[in-house]
Length: 169
Image (tube, rainbow, N blue to C red; front, side, top):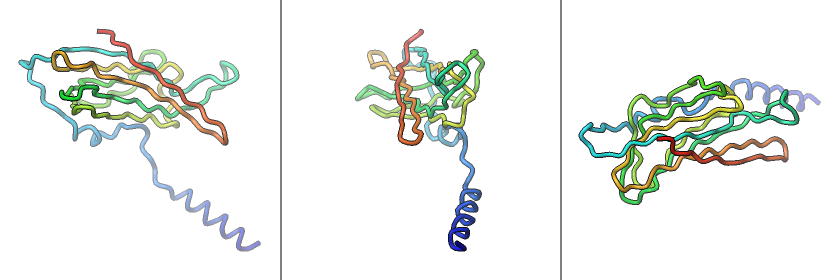
């Protein structure tokens, strides 16, 4: 009995001392390694894409929500060209900006993928969250691919689904 209580106390202490995790991929050092200087004279094609994602979904009724982990995938589909992402801005359900992930353009090398993770505990986006991406690519290069992968596991049940961005400009 004493051993059981001691193990329980040690477990509680270990959980209580757990390192605090940052919410989402908002650490600027994750992006500063990718910063790129783009000269205005460069003959790059401009584009803008919209991606819907879900920090929460409704469960059983409109009064109960279920939190999700969201992975936003930024993909360069070119085998030969580097592309540039100028903006990755996250908006909540009502269209208010939650955060912009980097302060200056980043690059993606050929066939490279970068990811933004929105932790399950970060429900700031709500049920109708979305991203706006602005990007530049060399002429005749494939457009970048932006996907949202949402998932959650609880007990023995799992839920996952994807969304794809649409070009809006």
